[in-house]
Length: 177
Image: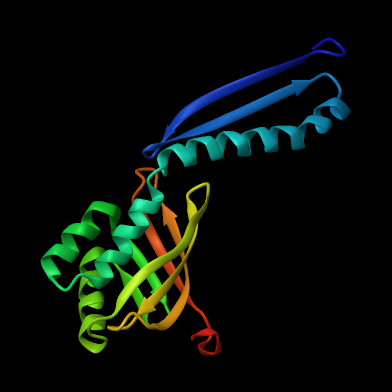
């Protein structure tokens, strides 16, 4: 390659339902190449954000369906709602759960409803999303609308826009009203 020249090669390949990008930016001089590395990292993060924002444009509605399902007393309706927004192999972790799969999650929520009848979970604030991962604050409300507990969930979305995993991080008891 002649001094001062460069060549950019972009190759796309199918990768298990997604697309993998291979980028090569060749330079005659190593110092010129090295000066471009961080710029490409930045540009690729912008590209990744655009795609993830498009795929997950409905993240708030998906998350709201998740929380509404925890408040749904009818097992069949709860499972229908969750089936629409969850990967069937969804993982759920929190202080009281180590769940794998939609069936176990539906059973877990039913048990929670038996032990905490009338409890309602609600999202509080905006969904904070970056490249398929979202942070969402929530509250657990009692039958009179009083705040019983709160926390933050970490949602991981798959390429389909469905939730692949949720980790619930409960606020320490002293932060509850």
